[in-house]
Length: 115
Image 1: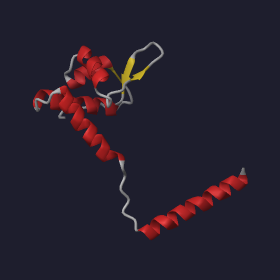
Image 2 (image 1 turned 120 degrees about the vertical axis):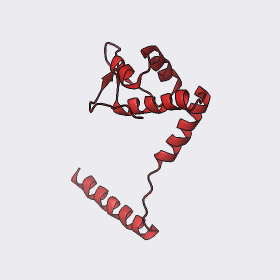
Image 3 (image 1 turned 180 degrees about the horizontal axis):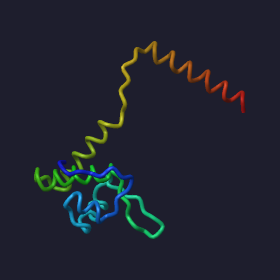
Image 4 (image 1 turned 45 degrees about the horizontal axis):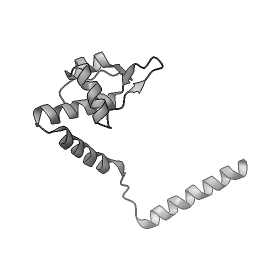
């Protein structure tokens, strides 16, 4: 992941190709194979990749080209890693959770009264 990703919101497929060193037809194929690569489509059906997509493409490229994973193996690793990243761990005691939930409930009640 030594490639430099410019600080932009969206990248066209040609820009992503230059950044990652992967041909556009391969990027389109990976888009169909890997759920983590989901470029935004404009009204004219042009693909716009986010920085997160470019980072995912670089990970996929490293797994397939450098580490010699198969596509199925790379999918398995990405799926495993996505499950681990989903849950945010907050190290509160159970009592603290209860206090926070009560505060949220009180706030919601006050908002409801305002409506």
